[in-house]
Length: 112
Image (cartoon, rainbow, N blue to C red; front, side, top):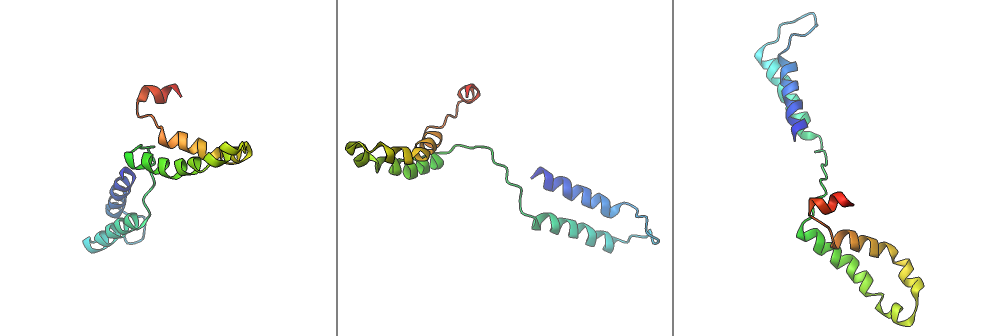
Protein backbone atom coordinates (compact mmCIF):
# COMPACT_ATOMS: atom_id res chain seq x y z
CA UNK A 1 0.00 0.00 0.00
CA UNK A 2 2.89 2.33 0.75
CA UNK A 3 4.29 1.80 -2.74
CA UNK A 4 0.96 2.80 -4.28
CA UNK A 5 0.85 6.00 -2.24
CA UNK A 6 4.43 6.86 -3.20
CA UNK A 7 3.63 6.19 -6.86
CA UNK A 8 0.60 8.44 -6.67
CA UNK A 9 2.56 11.25 -5.07
CA UNK A 10 5.40 10.95 -7.57
CA UNK A 11 2.93 10.85 -10.45
CA UNK A 12 1.19 13.99 -9.24
CA UNK A 13 4.54 15.72 -8.80
CA UNK A 14 5.58 14.68 -12.30
CA UNK A 15 2.34 16.02 -13.72
CA UNK A 16 2.93 19.42 -12.19
CA UNK A 17 6.66 19.61 -12.87
CA UNK A 18 7.83 21.65 -15.87
CA UNK A 19 8.60 19.52 -18.89
CA UNK A 20 11.46 19.77 -21.38
CA UNK A 21 9.08 19.81 -24.34
CA UNK A 22 8.84 22.74 -26.72
CA UNK A 23 5.64 23.84 -25.03
CA UNK A 24 6.33 24.08 -21.30
CA UNK A 25 2.82 25.44 -20.72
CA UNK A 26 0.79 22.92 -18.73
CA UNK A 27 -2.77 23.89 -18.00
CA UNK A 28 -4.93 22.50 -15.22
CA UNK A 29 -6.78 20.18 -17.55
CA UNK A 30 -3.59 18.49 -18.80
CA UNK A 31 -2.20 18.24 -15.27
CA UNK A 32 -5.44 16.70 -14.02
CA UNK A 33 -5.54 14.23 -16.91
CA UNK A 34 -1.97 13.18 -16.28
CA UNK A 35 -2.56 12.84 -12.53
CA UNK A 36 -5.71 10.80 -13.08
CA UNK A 37 -3.84 8.62 -15.54
CA UNK A 38 -1.22 7.87 -12.89
CA UNK A 39 -3.93 7.11 -10.32
CA UNK A 40 -5.77 4.83 -12.75
CA UNK A 41 -2.54 3.05 -13.61
CA UNK A 42 -1.65 2.53 -9.96
CA UNK A 43 -5.10 1.18 -9.17
CA UNK A 44 -5.23 -1.02 -12.25
CA UNK A 45 -1.98 -2.78 -11.37
CA UNK A 46 -2.42 -5.85 -9.23
CA UNK A 47 -1.56 -5.27 -5.64
CA UNK A 48 1.78 -6.60 -4.53
CA UNK A 49 1.38 -9.64 -2.34
CA UNK A 50 2.80 -9.07 1.07
CA UNK A 51 2.92 -12.43 2.74
CA UNK A 52 3.59 -11.94 6.38
CA UNK A 53 3.33 -15.57 7.44
CA UNK A 54 0.25 -14.82 9.48
CA UNK A 55 -1.08 -17.74 11.46
CA UNK A 56 -4.79 -17.71 12.04
CA UNK A 57 -7.24 -20.19 13.46
CA UNK A 58 -8.59 -20.76 9.96
CA UNK A 59 -5.20 -21.74 8.51
CA UNK A 60 -4.48 -24.08 11.42
CA UNK A 61 -7.88 -25.74 11.08
CA UNK A 62 -7.44 -26.04 7.33
CA UNK A 63 -4.08 -27.73 7.76
CA UNK A 64 -5.49 -30.12 10.34
CA UNK A 65 -8.42 -30.95 8.08
CA UNK A 66 -6.46 -31.55 4.89
CA UNK A 67 -3.30 -33.21 6.11
CA UNK A 68 -4.77 -34.75 9.25
CA UNK A 69 -7.24 -36.64 7.08
CA UNK A 70 -4.44 -37.97 4.91
CA UNK A 71 -2.52 -39.11 7.97
CA UNK A 72 -5.60 -40.69 9.57
CA UNK A 73 -6.23 -42.62 6.35
CA UNK A 74 -2.90 -44.40 6.92
CA UNK A 75 -4.28 -46.22 9.97
CA UNK A 76 -5.01 -49.42 8.05
CA UNK A 77 -1.63 -49.34 6.30
CA UNK A 78 0.15 -49.01 9.64
CA UNK A 79 -1.93 -51.84 11.14
CA UNK A 80 -0.91 -54.07 8.23
CA UNK A 81 2.74 -53.07 8.59
CA UNK A 82 2.88 -51.32 5.22
CA UNK A 83 5.42 -48.64 6.09
CA UNK A 84 6.06 -47.91 2.43
CA UNK A 85 2.62 -46.27 2.34
CA UNK A 86 3.61 -44.13 5.31
CA UNK A 87 6.84 -43.15 3.57
CA UNK A 88 4.84 -42.15 0.49
CA UNK A 89 2.85 -39.71 2.63
CA UNK A 90 5.97 -38.09 4.10
CA UNK A 91 4.94 -34.69 2.74
CA UNK A 92 1.59 -34.92 4.50
CA UNK A 93 3.41 -35.30 7.82
CA UNK A 94 5.70 -32.37 7.09
CA UNK A 95 2.87 -30.09 6.01
CA UNK A 96 0.70 -31.15 8.94
CA UNK A 97 3.45 -30.36 11.43
CA UNK A 98 4.25 -27.01 9.86
CA UNK A 99 0.62 -25.92 9.56
CA UNK A 100 -1.27 -27.48 12.44
CA UNK A 101 1.35 -26.84 15.11
CA UNK A 102 2.53 -23.36 14.24
CA UNK A 103 4.13 -21.22 16.88
CA UNK A 104 2.97 -17.65 17.39
CA UNK A 105 5.48 -16.93 20.12
CA UNK A 106 8.39 -14.78 18.77
CA UNK A 107 10.95 -16.51 21.01
CA UNK A 108 10.01 -19.94 19.67
CA UNK A 109 10.11 -18.64 16.08
CA UNK A 110 13.57 -17.17 16.68
CA UNK A 111 14.83 -20.47 18.07
CA UNK A 112 14.00 -22.20 14.79
